[in-house]
Length: 219
Image (cartoon, rainbow, N blue to C red; front, side):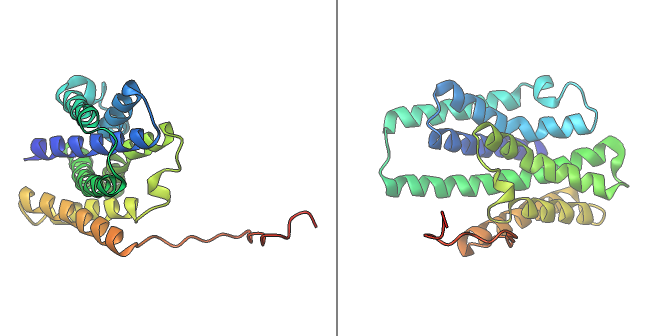
């Protein structure tokens, strides 16, 4: 089950990386790099934190291969369809947001599970931290490479959703079978992200420096 979920998350994140590459008008190589980094970057960070060398993305080529196949499909679709009308592009963006939410939930749970499998089950802070970083790590690397303020710092309770999903999994795995604990964690992330997107939920932003009123400059 976990392997299938990881592949689903890999595909979902690769698509979101391709979307950002498209917005930044990157070439074919840039699309592949951004799509692949988004898909496997969080897992690589997780493995480095847990002392697993080389990271799993280098030991098991299925993840990079899956990300690459997703990028190829994206490029094929872009060549075949050409520039999409704005309405259709927004619909595609919505689909990507849904897939990104699924990927976030999957990797947040898988990250925590991996930390527990490595013998850190009694260190709840580490287990949850690794889960959150696994979920958001790929997107963080994507945004930095695309010269953007990372999504986790500015939009739709992204990292908070990963924190909630990882915490739910860690709490339930002690009482429920793995299937139900994993499902609860993934669904928690998906529901929070979906509600945040539909209702435009964001964490509060506090700015200490007052904005200058237009027309007051130069006095």
